[in-house]
Amino acid sequence: MARDPKALSHPQIQRVETSFAAQGLMATLSATLEALGPGSSRIAAPILPGSRQQQGFAHAGLTFAIGDSAAGYAALTTMPEGFEVVTAEMKINLLAPGVGDRLVAEGRVLKPGKRLIVTQADVYADKGGTRRHIATLLGTMVPVPA
Image (cartoon, rainbow, N blue to C red):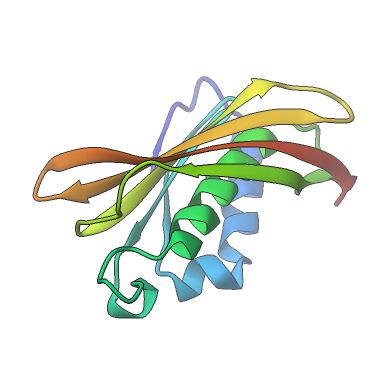
């Protein structure tokens, strides 16, 4: 995983990696945490036969799941020790079909806060080195005790 060790402390990185490893859905989707920074994260998942819709594209559920998680882990990097985050609401705009080998979600915090954290994630389909923007998510995370 790419990370800037100067930007996040080792305990912050470990906390996110431990949380990600505990997510059964991410494991089911073969998703990986690729990058982590202050207020940002990147998650990728292959477009496997079991995560395709009837026309062969990546299912919107896959797109939403990794986009929501990328936004959530971006938010978690802004939280003090002893807190997690949960999604309170998330809107998705599907911009294009998810055609390719894998999807990549890049999450970021737009506005950190103690009660609400506004996040955004953009999801891209990678196909043979070409990247296409397929979705944008905008949501609100709520801090909860760990």
